[in-house]
Amino acid sequence: MKAQEFEELNVYQRARELTNRTYELTRDSAFARDFGLIDQIRRASVSIMSNIAEGFERGTNAEFVQFLYIAKGSAGEVRAQASIAFDQRYISREDYDDLTDRCRRISGMLNNLIAYLRQPRFAGRRTQKPQYKSLAEELNEILKKG
Image: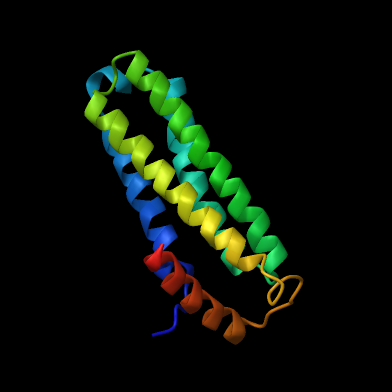
């Protein structure tokens, strides 16, 4: 089966789960009063998803890689904000560990995807949509193994 849309990418699906978990945790009564931190952590988690999607829809591997690096940075941002939330006792140790573990896994998946796209056989190659879909299929297989 070929991945025809970014929603089929495993890393995108994990980022979506992280975003949903982030929204769930920020609805808690103690956390819900810290509007600034809620806005930051939600925006950072949404940024991971958004940058994977935007990069996938671009026409070159170089642009895709650029957006994957931004997504990776946003995963780090979520981890930092989760630390603040834990320090302020907005979330439990279990929730903190869950968020940071999800972010680390997503970062690892993004690293693998970036490394794969930067291989010489793909570097600088302008892709057409049908070829790009085949590449997405290959990437999903690699990410599932990793």
